[in-house]
Image (cartoon, rainbow, N blue to C red; front, side, top):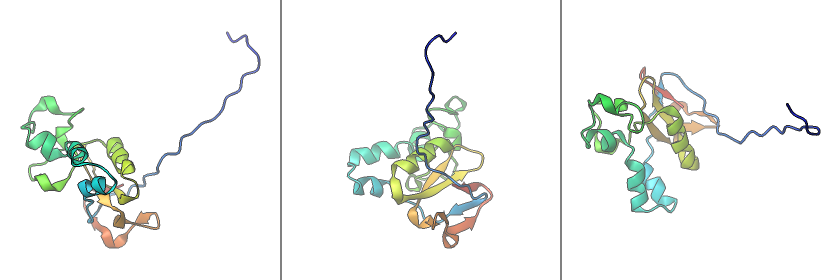
Length: 148
């Protein structure tokens, strides 16, 4: 039971980025995440830490692929695919973590190619977006991905 004086409630909504989804589309302009981190003052150690979350490093090269105990957090190795190679920079992360990674890179990140069923994404270059919309010249049809 409240027995104090008048109560006030303030509405506080932190500014959050909006992510529009283009279904069954992917951008073809990949972002070199390591180069962006270095250009923004990061060190080689920082780049290594960021890239540790790629499917290649946290799942394939570590031998975690196919281990059912590794599904879900923190590794999300079910997002790893047989054709993954070290240079791909695909991240085995759920959408909200991919969005946070893109937001952390600022204007260099133009969006995310997000797998439609798996915790798997790739951060894409700023050229993927023109006037806050997906750039048609950078888009390709893909039934497995959404451009976010």
